[in-house]
Amino acid sequence: MGRKKNAKTLLDAFEKALKSGQFSKSGDEYVIHCPFCDDSTGHHYINLYKKMSYCFNSSCHASVIFTTFFAGHNVRNILATEISNRKHRDKGQEAIDLSCPLKPIFGHEASPLVSMPVQATIRKVYNYCLSRGMTHKQIEEYKVSFKPYEGRAYFPYWNGDGQTVFWMGRALGDQLPKTAEKRGSEKPLFGRHVKRIRNGPVVLVEGVFDHFATPNSYALMGSSITASQIAALIEDHIPRVFFIADPDASEAMQSMASALSGSHIEAYPVQLIGTTADPAELGREAMSKVVGELLKMDLALPQVLRVSVDSLPF
Image 1: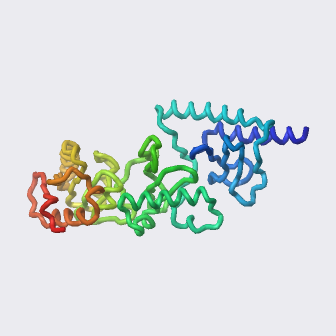
Image 2: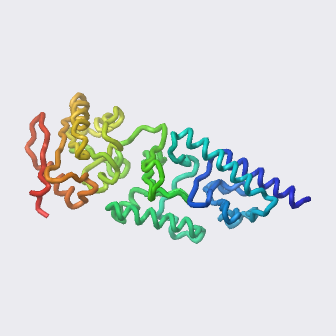
Image 3: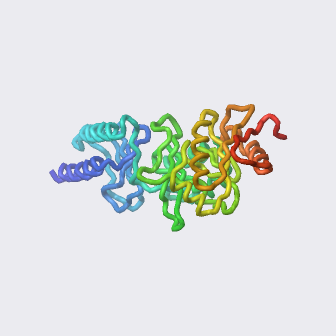
């Protein structure tokens, strides 16, 4: 009887954790904040097919194996209901666990307390960043992060106090949405938190990987510019900006140029001739030469700048 009562207590604890919606999914495993110890970093996983529950916190002794009376099918029902609710709230897209803090991959990869599945996630994030053209130094400098058992690479933006105020998460596989951003936060000029440019020209690109490939750049995190992003440029006394967007964003570039001109910042849309690739696809060497050409130009407003990629010396 005592054994059944203990199982009921454990199930109640799991039910509370699962109904909170604070879990993430990786394959057949669901990762939750452990209801049995003080760990709140997502070290407790449930595998419904193996009927196993385990906490990777070495000091937690409440981990259990599901038995027939532990009602694993009830746990499945709780999960199915909560997942359905979350999908409805997110219009059919995979829900993102906002509760688990981001963890930089550097600093965690060598820890003896890191479990094998988490080590595998760290390796995937690292290899993904390299495949997108990032350098080892950039991965460390930008504090590329992960969440345990979640298949995304996270790119945080922190304020002067070191607090993460925005992040972009990029799926490593076929998760939806492919790109996720922190809700309720102003989009920053990504890159300004690592290297702040003052009194000089800035290149504005669309996404983080465009930024990583382009010198003197910030990423707008989209194809439009916000009032707060313009205010940041004014604060840093930026006299001139160049817009290098995806090939299909020429109209958006003209609109952004008009918005900046109204704030007395010279703004030049840039067309890359001879390619349909975006800055991230062109790569660091090509974009360094493109930016070098832009900085040498004798400029007069208004005009669209055209840089022939084929004519650049490689």
